[in-house]
Length: 81
Image 1 (tube, rainbow, N blue to C red):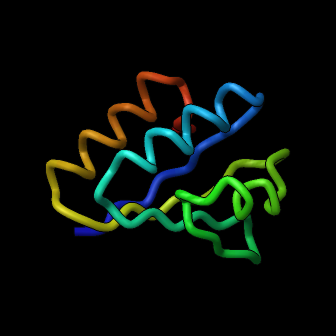
Image 2 (cartoon, rainbow, N blue to C red):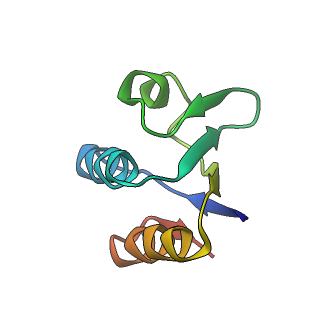
């Protein structure tokens, strides 16, 4: 399954939480800022994006694992409706 969401990473702690959640997940996470695609588990890749605007995140994997990860994004107030 594949699920697309938008996230906002407004401060250092949110960036760290986002990377930590992604790193612990077995899902594939792709992040896009409009023109660049990076691996959502790469801190270096993430810091190369424009973090001043919302990021498009695509999560690919098992349905339950995708739901768990997106629930964590929501609990940490990273999701944009």
